[in-house]
Length: 246
Image: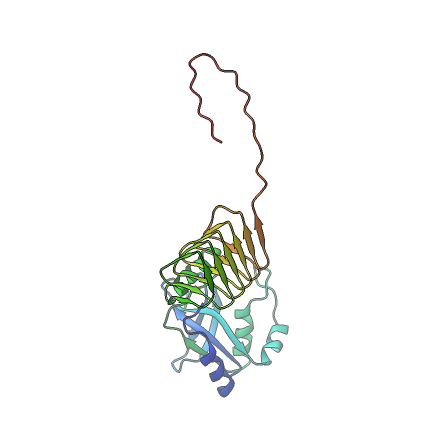
């Protein structure tokens, strides 16, 4: 995730037409990343994947732009010690072949979204900047704080505490949507509670208590199980006191 996106980078790549363009950022400990070494002009002269002794503090962000020259480089690759073809090796092949590999250093916020916790953190950051906007239909419901209800979304008998977003085509009924929750388009949240979560397109949660810190994929169905009737058989002596969890 990169604040501001990469549209300007893509336009510059198409205009300048280097053989490859990569994004870098300065990190305190580059050892868990691919690391780039630059010459005095800022050209990339070397790459290492997760080096024990990094030659710079410039880590690969994970955004790469290539011309068709990269296919020739990939064909020459051999699997690394991890048994994988490494993208850093492909870029190094381009460098060794005399190709032009440009770099751009990202100075703003970025996040490697390699885990659910990372994705939720980025979602929190994005929602922290939304402004309230109710363009959808809201009936007998309470919207608190910065809540976005897009046109085409319907909220009925529910309580939504922002920052939160409900995208077009989604239905929220008899439910609670808590802070830092994003509901994608065409979802259904019915008789459920969701907080600090992301629900992707077409997913549904019906009769679920309670979902939090979760990532629900596209077209997923989450429903409650039928209530199982339980019976207790008791033989109690005089003056007993019993606590039963129902």
